[in-house]
Length: 227
Image (cartoon, rainbow, N blue to C red; front, top):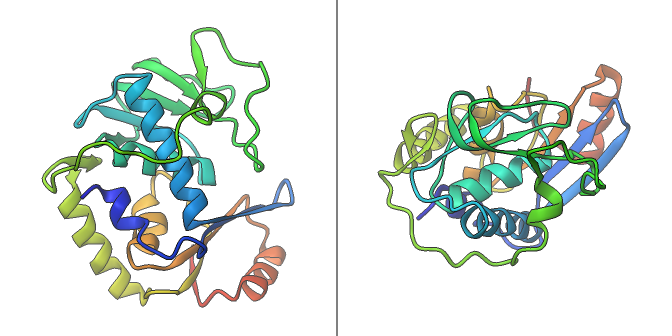
């Protein structure tokens, strides 16, 4: 079973990721079903369009955002290893950034509503949202063995075990609402994987404003804060 399948086991309608950008004053909420669809589109695009195979390295050089979550989940679903630097078959970057060590560069728009780059694609790069959204909402690829590297050299089984330990330490359980300002990819293990693996839902705040954080915690009824 892939890491993605471990992380998307909640009820389809359950809120999974709520993303705030306090600088832009935006809020977007994605259910398990919606996040699963984006992960499937991403996995299908990586496999069918970019020939990504189990064990291939996919660099994720994006900030904490729901599109980043879709990239993580899509890459893991098709058996790729997510890395944060170095050579990679595909690298995902924000607008204006580059990834010289990657064979292919995909630019994520990071638009809160999921709009694509609207034609503003750098030469030699791909528009992740614009391209991936055309692919299927179901991923039917083969199973991913537990000893497959999936995140920074750790295997699926190792990441699942680490997430379980972290969740127990932090007190995250099924249904826990967690507010986090931790940045990705540096803190993606604690601030993303651990929350989903425990069956919790994540309220991720980017460009956090201290005054707005208190309101977010109250509005979203979060009980654990990671910062």
